[in-house]
Image: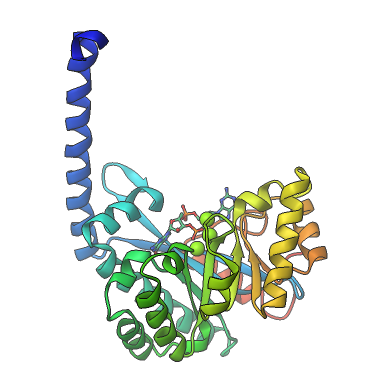
Length: 285
Ligand code: C2E
Ligand code: MG
Ligand code: MG
Ligand code: MG
């Protein structure tokens, strides 16, 4: 086989593989160190209430400013964190920092409520003490439970279903909100949606992207908004980049939206300003 594909090809292949492994181990080490030294950061992307056009909250998104590689994207380090178990301390840090920040901004705005959304990996559900961790963070930060939203993907519903259902019920009992992230890209069934204590559907960006361009996607988005309504769930559209998409979603009756059209995820100082400026008057139309 090696001969058939040519010796050169084979010889080239192995060093590249080794490089990949070394790089991965290096990144894993760096991530562990960065976490211990408190070098990870959160950026915040506003959530807009489509009825009032106001900023009602933020989604916390992890950022890793690496000393030599520059800013590393969460899509590149969250999988490493998941594979190594680092996602557990990382996830706890994100939760704590996001709640702490929400309490601070809300106080600075005279107590105006701020909804904070935090992404939770399916791997964090492997730990039976997830609800205890969340309860401890709420107590430590003074964050009112009903202002916290945990976002998870459909995989939480589809794997370890019984155990995860139990964990979600315990999380729900704390009084927080649960959202399905990237909704429409997984394989969860309507039966699952009804069974799980889910409050919010976040419509995946891939549908929003093609709104008004591809009729099927427009119909699907409309269907998800209706589905949410008939199940008594809120709907959030992610990835709005253009006014046309916003107009279409408004017409469908989608409740909330996020996307570059309003704001990219921004560092804390800028997000704090967005929240304060957004008080009283609609900042986006
Ligand atoms: P997500 O939770 O679905 O977050 C939305 C992603 O879409 C973010 O990417 C955001 O920057 C991007 N986005 C928002 N609006 C737009 C838009 O209008 N256009 C485009 N093209 N993109 C938009 P980001 O920050 O790179 O995060 C990627 C994913 O990494 C997140 O997807 C989430 O699954 C994961 N992630 C981020 N932070 C955390 C974390 O603290 N914990 C866990 N477990 N996962 C995280
Ligand atoms: Mg999310
Ligand atoms: Mg999402
Ligand atoms: Mg997404």
